Image 1 (cartoon, rainbow, N blue to C red):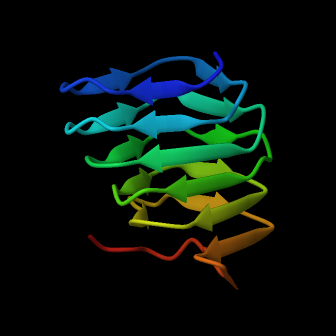
Image 2 (tube, rainbow, N blue to C red):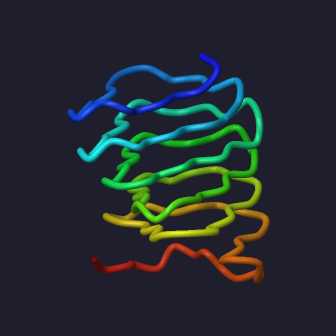
Length: 122
């Protein structure tokens, strides 16, 4: 699959297997929470635009690529994710329920920072 886009006014829950994203991109302009229980493989550096309602990723993201989070909507990770670098440019990003992000570097805005495995509360 090239990219993933949620535009409808309803919730989706993607389960089972692995979703492989050639572009690495995910866009959500939905007003309903989107849940990704399937594992995700990024084949390219991805830009995840989360405009409104949360996108919750319960599956593992891997592919050793960069992930850039934009827009004001929240993005939640609950699994152990393997990314090269994570960039948080806008909105909220939460690592929940024992999840983690293994990065070479983590960036918040334009500043390098640490995105560890510490618990982050809501």
